[in-house]
Length: 143
Length: 434
Image (cartoon, rainbow over all chains, first blue to last red; front, side):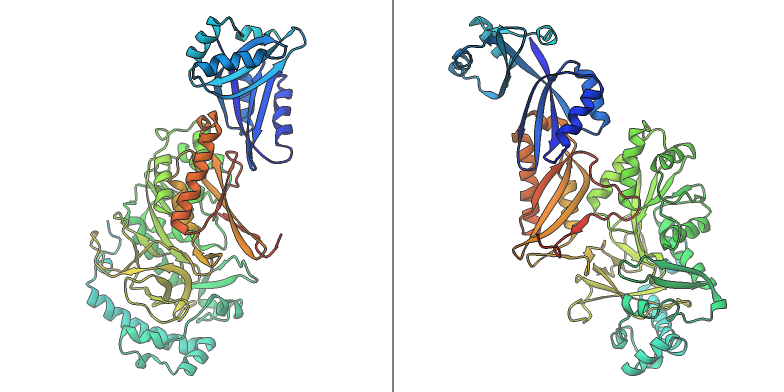
């Protein structure tokens, strides 16, 4: 139901993001989705990668501080209004979204949206009930 | 445990009369053997027989680090070269090093003083002591070395550096006593644990830390990290080296070796003596030193004296842990700030490592303090709120203690420099206005 997302502390300094992504490149790890938010001094980088365990090991090796979060990913059609529909369902049921990011893929018509909510279980049941398709780890791996 | 119980528990009155007798002798000794003191004492009109009581010490002129430097290298020595058996020097952050010499008696007294503070925390001849102070001109390593050997410890003179090897030897040689700076002990425990060495693998039971200040909070962290009990000791090469004072097992102040050193507290601005119990600059007179005697040496260290007898039975006065140095004291926007205050605040915050760096800058004639701390708690990465509240709590705790606003910056774990000797945590760039 949920997929693994990495949260990585990253100092807001020249070259830090380049260093970090090259660590993953060296391990031949593919980045499926990515979101970075920053403050003046630091940022939290959120990644969904092809091999979570190896990515953690490689990043920790370089002294990174990493945590793994279970997030929900849904697949929606890449058409105007489809994200809004899903968000409306959540908001009508008082489920607040801590952060969200989306990505489209080459192979399918649809887009994927990653959500971080407090209660994955409740959100997943609610969305399924409304016919929203949840992406599994296999779906993401197959991208 | 005592090394020289008769002396260490000597009734106060007896101790003071011993000090008076030695002080009179020391004044004459300096007058007769060191041209610098001859001139200073003549100008002040002080001779040994003019000293009637201990408080008459206030008529003796002060000696400063600059005086030692001005007489570089051997100008303040009171004995001919053939009587000197050892020469040490302290690193000159400004210009030439300050050079000190020891006679055979000096070395002997020095190792007695060190042996006292080691036995006061329970070191015995069964112990194996790993000395991770840097050997060389610096007095720390050889000072502890001689004192520990005098007790009968097996001394491992590993010196500082090569931290992985330090951890290996700690484990393989079964070291029971660690001698180092507190910041190096902290780092060593991190490295040892990274190497998979647990506290069950090592036999450390006592830490003898010194050569830089250590807050109780940092001490607790090191003790937890290594599973040991530690004491703080104090000294400086100008006076002798480590062993001028040291904590006993009660850790309620550092006992002076008062038969060898006479401490005073003065107001660093007015230079007037302050009554017992007041905070001020520590001034120390050597009472037995032959090689390079010091009259009223201004240590620049801020502390306080306590003459109450201690629960351990020692009668020698105790000093508080050094609060800071009157010349290291940071003046930020006119507020006096001691790095030790900042350290106390930071070591009480969860989720960060005990390593930190202070960066001072000046913009538009205003000072800015930035405190860099290392994030170690990965669970805080869940959301910004967690990280932001960590940062905010550091800001507000610092504001409470210091009375000024600091910028707190979170940095990656292990990105701040680690130190094998004295930590240099302050980067003062205020002279490079940006």
